[in-house]
Image (cartoon, rainbow, N blue to C red; front, side, top):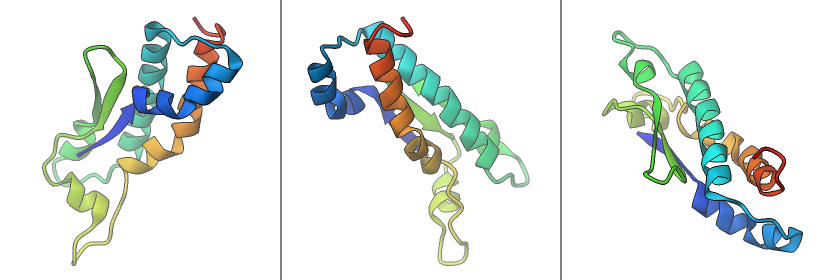
Length: 121
């Protein structure tokens, strides 16, 4: 189960603001923003992951980056993580994958704008 941080989608939402500000976001800046936020998301996913008998769900949480680095898949390799995240008829939901990604969307937007303005090249 993964939460997706898609830099290009986020940039699409920021396109008007970036254009109005006269900013240019480089591939390097976008890649740095994606990586920086993905690391924060993974840390929070690990902190919030319930630990069962094996600890596999928590222990396999990581970020996998696309070839260009513009996207990161943040999550776990366990096949049953969606049952924990979404719950079942017998178990209440215990979300730990998606909330950190949602929580940091605005921070990602700010980083992209900051890199675009030359603040953190």
